[in-house]
Length: 386
Ligand code: NZQ
Ligand code: ZN
Image (cartoon, rainbow, N blue to C red):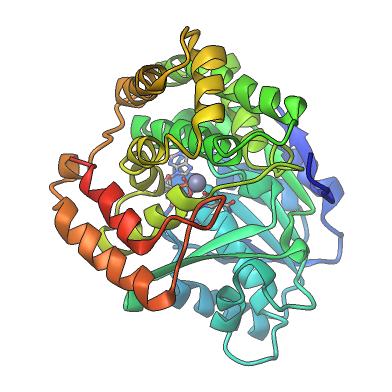
């Protein structure tokens, strides 16, 4: 196993009827900026519950954070927050609201230039403070409720990047599964697939003799396969939604990646597809992952074989087992209603391949756990998505 450090300071408050508990975790005299998205919280009762829990506190609102949160929107919240001297950020929504709120929390006290510099800092974003963040999660998918990641888009320049800082871990996250009841089917589907891909990117690399992490990852695959279809049913089933919510959090709270290599190539390629074509995050992953894993089948053979045996119960030790396992995974995604080819969206794989190859070439991007997936390989992978 590789050396590692593990730090996760987020308090999780889980279960039905837990939104009022935010009252005990936000200072009485805080000046709160409540951030939310396009309005779902105004029609499903979450907004009222949050406002009631805030009680007599002074609070301001910033709504309109869009899916794949846009820098130009968030910078308005930064300016507003500075004017109103807010000192606590309360994010109420899905991954986009949470990620956007992290940039707002870091951007308000930032004095070293344009706030975009924080995003450009990537994995070692240079900030020395951020306002405290509280979360009420309404969409199980990203794990943002229990990690220090934030993914920000800039539509004006067709860019989408992840930045990371320990300073933006939420202080607390309320996970009330009943908030997910109003989600449309495609968002539940997106959440299941996003969580599944998170686990795959922390698992399908090479073995470093870390059996606990392997089995944690496999248990998440199996759980998602079991509960995924149930979570899509209407009327919503509390147990299925509760299990999905906690499973998605565990898929990216950075526990299963400790001490093992990671491969975030599918996410990096997916972010480019979202920036270029506007695909939802999970949609962008599902059109890449099966093809990337097949392309990398020799590099990843040990782990993919283990995945085939333990997750899909397949016997044998040649390439055909990997092919079968990837076919099972793809069928699982499709069964949830998730397309797995670029052509399903009317996107020309050749065009996507050329554009992304050129962009990665320019930046000298190499992906994968061995940093050996070249821009040309990325183009070959995208051309397979038809
Ligand atoms: O904006 P509102 O009106 O709230 O509607 C949202 C939005 O349209 C809706 N929604 C959320 N909760 C709802 C609801 N509708 C009805 N009832 C509810 N309870 O769902 C739509 C999508 O929301 P969004 O937040 O965009 O979805 P998701 O949670 O999938 O987040 C995607 C973003 O997270 C980033 C992605 O790149 C993307 O920008 N990611 C963040 C990660 C992280 N921080 O660790 C990791 C991920 O890999 C991912 O990259
Ligand atoms: Zn993701």
